[in-house]
Image (tube, rainbow, N blue to C red; front, side, top):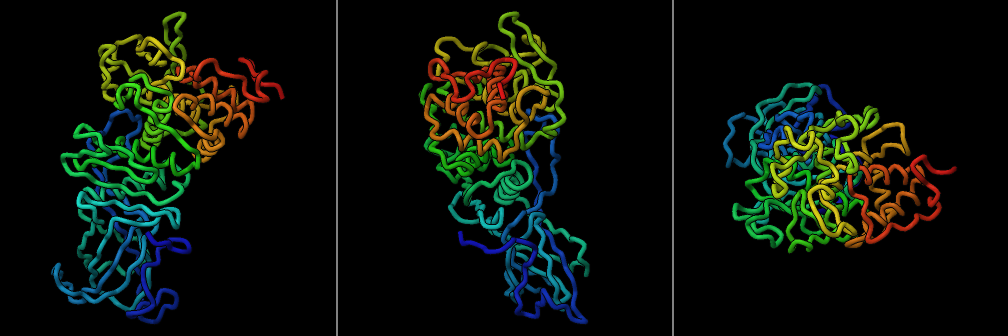
Length: 444
């Protein structure tokens, strides 16, 4: 992708072809034209408490070209007169002033630039950028936005969804260009055979099967992997080989796998749930092993499908859509402790780490530290340095203490302990300068 200098505001037109974006004339006309597409998802109401409704989503920052159709007799193969090209703004809009009044032919391409210079490209199963051409009847002569809809296809839906997630929901620069590849129906993505529905490839790419491009949480999860890799410069290991390189939501894994996959699911959870990080005064469920009961009120900002995660049997790992009613007092957290046996040192589950990140990010219970923004989370992971197969939690404790102080470190320890994600590779060592922290807090 080439760089684009300056802010990507809604300036589509060139100074040629009668276009005068800066110096209006007596006959000039103002236009604001906005590109949207329909984003309808199949996984509505699965582990979210506030569904962001289906409907038109902007093709934010996308590549657009316009040509003149002065006679308004749209014929797809006609060589219409070139008018201008450029990139839309966050709302998918371009604004310009011209003395031309008539119809337009547009071409939308499945790439654009987020955060001014960071590219987002969506490639089809044949390895090419998608391109859609269509007709815009003479728009009104006004700066009031006039929206036209790009016909829904997999590329448009995926582009709009990734742009939405990156710019409107999970804030913090992705740190570089992002490439999304749509795979055909056989979908042998990332070497995983036909069983893989999606995966993150290398540090800046995600693969999504065509049949799965209507699943918002799946796309959010893969975006979460890319976001973590690109928002930090750490060497991050994601070793999911404990069970033969297969993993799921509740399988016991090396901590690097549990943490990396838990982060990715946390990102998806955070994107598609509506919460105010400062308005969660009461808390969360956790499992009290001593009394075998559920402690604390439910988290008001997460659907119980996520908080409880009650499978029908200990072997049922279809946890995302599991029925939670009536099992274990509707409270199963610390999933690894309650659903697995054997070695816990250097191990974890995706669901425990997902909920630990969620609580650490959102809860504001008047205890230690404060809730953290996306950028602060990324900075604290960055401060943790190299994250190996078994030392994620050990290194994260050190990174939070070094970058955010001992009281924030105490917050991390509390929430990760509550969710059963507090396993070092062996005994956890004292964190420098925070060794005197205990359940009552940390010294000044």
